Amino acid sequence: MKIGIVGVSGYGGSELLRLCAAHPQFELAYVGGEASAGQRLAERFPALAGHPAGALKIEPFAPEKISGIDLLFASLPTGKSREPLARVSKDIRVVDVGGDHRFVEGWTYGLTELPGQRERIRGATRLANPGCYPAAALLALAPLVKEGLVEPEGIVIDAKSGITGAGRGGQSEFGYVETDEDLFAYGLEAHPHVPEIEQALAQLCGKKASVAFTPHLVPMRRGILATCYARPKGAAQAARLYEAAQSCYRDEPFVRLRPVEKGRSPHTSWASGSNLAFLSYAVNPRTGLVVALGAIDNLGKGAAAQAVQNANLMTGQADTAGLAGLPLWP
Image (cartoon, rainbow, N blue to C red; front, side, top):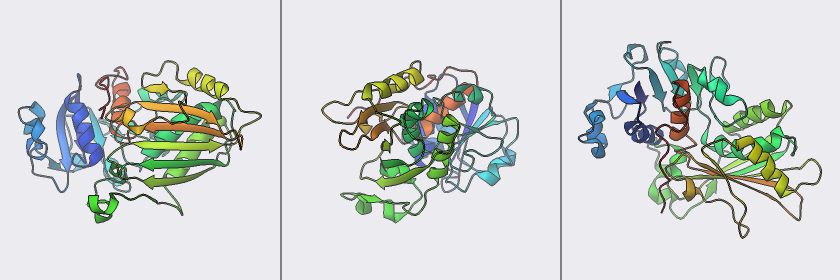
């Protein structure tokens, strides 16, 4: 299965490269980029010296000229993929890791574990990967909304991401000096992930959903923790929340349900370098609010590994192909 990656020098693109270079059925045949165009992969990524992919030269992205591949991963900044991907041959399957095609007509939304979504993904030729924050929040909330255990309106999502979640982009405000020993919220007036989350939740419950979402950037390289608060329908019990999640994710290879231990949530480091999602549930004893928590790697389940899982399904392979490795434990 010949595949290509455009945006290979970004955080998401380079993680795709790492996963695809070791994939049992994918052969990397095309790589595209802008600032890195003209370099061979082994120059940009010295670990690929001696690997067949290392000799590939990064080409300027000319969509209409791409040929000889079965599937293209596009890892471009939001706002940069809609026009060029429209010019990619219809014979080439496309997975857009960026944000331009989520819930756009003609594109299939690619959070595999959402109820009913896997079959849609298998038949897709144009696939929109979920955002990193929505991947963590939706996996935590989906069973509760689907089973009618919480109100779909007025959900509060407090989420924190590592610096790679902001993209490489060359912006000095996200450099080491600017982010080390610092923590701040952003996107307070509006955030592009809000409509994505609301639309996915609304499809699950068949009625309007609304969320208040506040993302934060924390001084770590990778990882997302989404802490979601929702009003229960009736008296909430933690055991019932876990039952709903167990029913929803019983056969999912990448979802791990964890009890809250000593009052602590899952750790982002548990998922680092993997496609795993760790979910926990609790009920706040003072307010009665349901608390749903999701911990993922923003470059894994939130981007590249999720994209590979989608590509596996689109090309008739098992979800786990190329994704069965353990996380990068500290």
